[in-house]
Each structure stands twice: as structure tokens, then as C-alpha cells.
Length: 424
Ligand SMILES: [Zn+2]
Image (cartoon, rainbow, N blue to C red; front, side):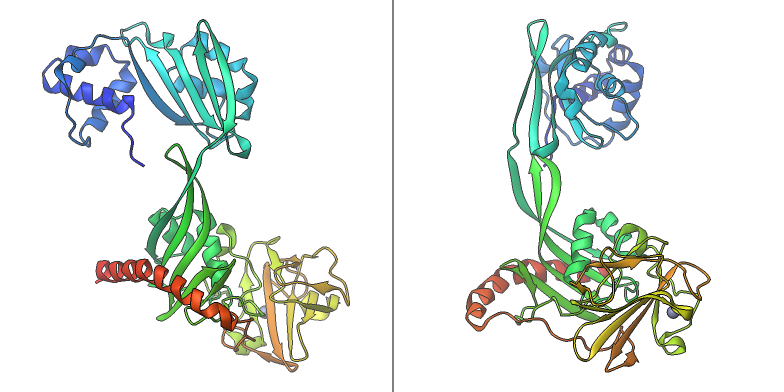
């Protein structure tokens, strides 16, 4: 994805100039740029510069890239791209500029005269950015004016392989490894029946993941699906492979069980609470349930398909929802601030549906979810109770699946091996 833009070439030119003791060059570059370029010069990779190129006179055209920040103005961004005031005016009148959203990178080629006093006269050659609905917007110079075009962007998909070690939280680990949030959340979903990401993550847990990454013009656009992943939680290794739209363990067992481990979805906000023990109760035995500390208003989900057996107020539980999943299993969700849409006695719910929002109704000193898992009417520890299995891969699917597993096992093994080596 590394590209040498004309700007980098310009930086190269500057290095050449400085190293040739042509100190005068520095003074004809706008001051802030000179500092930036000099600061960058130290970490430049060596590049060959032809003498005739180095001696080319200004003005030169170069490409710059910048991002529309939140709270930014179009004018501010365009000026940072070194586009002169006259062209900024023209651009602001282009309706296509309104397709530019915060966070999106804008690339512009500008013909600039670097002599002092001419910094604000940069002439736009072209500018492009990715619009909504994955189109590429390009605005080009045409004589004295500008013309705009919008066309479907060429999206390229490739596979990324990353691994990370958990030190404080899942998101801190994915941040450190440069893994997008969407992949972190998918990982938690893929292993949602194996690992409770709010309560069971430990320092030293690690994972490797293969996922699709979509990009446009060499720029990462967004993450796609997780293709394969390995997660080592408290020394236990879990592996999942995507096949025909579902995730399976290498032996063909469905990763998606009839019930999820955690009634809380993983998010950046809720995950921050996960590694702490909630102060209200010391352990599961003390009160027959598990407490999830989470900000009031966090979505609480049904851990499995079922029927609402109760939805209303009940003593110390406050607002309570009881779901019956089958003749043996039921789950209780207490202290809710509000009930989910359509959650009333006898209503049907599907796994993942919102049963309500975290609150502190009933006997609760702070916002948290009190969660109970009952088997044949007896409260059991939801962290250790065996969960009913999901539908495994059909017999006739096993042969093609094994071929698939073989193909993905190699990269996963390699990643895991490298990671272990790096840790030792
Ligand atoms: Zn509780």
C-alpha cells in the first residue's frame, strides 16, 4: 500500500538539496512545511534522484492527502491541501463537495509556486475522494474552471492477517495491532458461545485473525468478514473458520450455540468495564447470578431464541425479564431501565434481540445488569454451565469443509507460531 507520491518525491528533492548544502532552498519553502519536511527527512528511505530532476525549477505540482476532521470546514481542509484561494472559491461552489464526509481522505494534486509570497496561489490540477455509496468523486481542472465526475469506485478486496496479545482490553489489543473495530466485534461474536468477552478475558490471552479488507486506490476502506480466527483464552485454544456463511470449529462443530455466553454485546464502551470485578457482589454463589457493570442504557440481548415468561417489576430485581428457551433453560435479566420493543409476556424473541437496557431499578446501587441462568429452575453459574449445542455441519459438507480448513490452517498456524516466538 506504500506509494510514492509527488510530495514524497518533493521531500526527496529537499533532502538532496539540503545535503548539497543549498541552504537557500529551505527559505523558499513555506515555513511550516520546511519544518515538517526536515523533521520527516531523517526517517526517509533512500531514493535515487536524477540530477536533471533535482534541478527542475519551481513551480512544481505535487500530490497531498488530508482528512476532513470532525468540526473541520471544507475551506480549512482545502487550504491545508495548499489549494489557492481562487480555486478554493471554485471548489466550494461545486455541489459534489457536499458528498465529502468527515473522516474521508481527500487527495489533491496542486501546482504550486514555492517562492515566498506565492504560497496562497496553488492551482488545483485534480482532487478526488470517496463519496457515500462507494463512488469515487473527482474534480479536475478544465481551462479556467473545474469539472466534476462521480463513478463507481474500484473496490479491491484482499486478506489481512494479524495477531495480538491482550494486556488491558480487547480494544487496546486490536488498536495496538491496527485491527479495525469491526473485526474486534466480529471476533467477539464468532466466539460468543465460547468466551464471555466481558468477564473471561485475561491478561495474556491472544488471538490471530484472517479477515477481508476492502480498499480503494490503495486506501483501506473498511474491513469485511472474518475468515478464520484463533483465540487463546485462559490457556484454552479456540479456532473458528467461516464456511458457507457460518463459523465452525475445525471438527465441524457449529460455533454458534443455541445460547450465547454473555447477554451484553461487546462494544468499545461496554468492554472497558469487563476486566473489572463488579463491587456489588463478590462472586456468583453470593446471589445466584452474574453482575455485568455497564453504563446505563447499554443494550441487553436475549442469549437465545425463546418466549417471554415474565416482563415487569419484581421486588429487588426491579424491572425484570425472564426468557424461557426450552423445557429446561431460562434466563433472567434484572434492574433494567427499560424493556425492549415488543417485550411482553408470551412474546417470542430471537437470539440477539434487545430485551431491554441496563439500568439500576430495584436493589441496585449503580447501573448494572444482574443475569441469571437457570437449568430446570435451579440457578447455575452461566460462566461454566455447558451450553446446548448448535447444528453441526452436515455430513456431506464435511469433505469440502476439510479442504477449506486445510487452506486456512496454514496461515493461522504461522501467525500463532510467530506470535509465540515473539513472546518468548
Ligand atoms: Zn446481581
